[in-house]
View 1: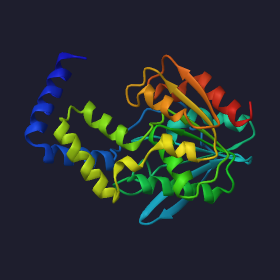
View 2: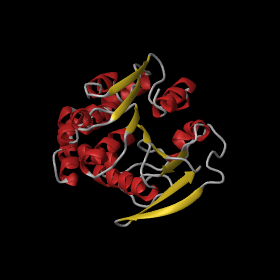
View 3: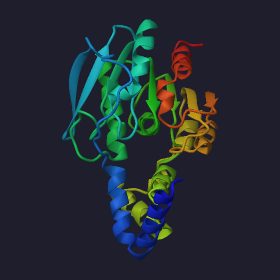
Length: 275
């Protein structure tokens, strides 16, 4: 860690100890309101020639891209990303005779909205799945993986197979880790958690991926890098306590580089195919 970053974290920790309410509220907004950033895309136009549909959910419009004519596999991106994040899976899935469906979560990419509370993202996943017919499977990254589990347990998502890449084990741990990386003090973290729970109308602790997986009948593949600095590897091992679970642990890959790893893509496609 650079000296400049250490100094910044020290300043934030000191100020957030003095003003926990202000810093906690700012961090809560960050958890609920994704930034729309310009992203670098590894693959050139993988959805060229796809069909585009729009789904209305409450006051949000969600764009959905579909390519191919086989049984659909749904790609679900992570926080502050968009449907292009999993572009590397598109052609291998098409080559395996699936159709590929991708979309932008509310308040992400080309979707409308400013906030992306957890239940809204989960409902969007279910709505997209229902719009394309019975799913063969899901490939989801990070928060998208957590919301896939929430959608399956509470919002009627139907899928037989799921590949979760870098998925957290629970929303509370993910939020607190996010706040800690920003340098928040314990008092500010507590205020942040309270603000998020109030916005969701229920405790953040209720959103547990590991416990939900144990209650679901999913054919599951977990993929995680041991050096993931966003979602700790311990989250992966907690999720792996679910019943019908396969795993692929990598020493290197971080949080996002896994999405462009050829071995990860091959493993996911082979798993969806029953291997």
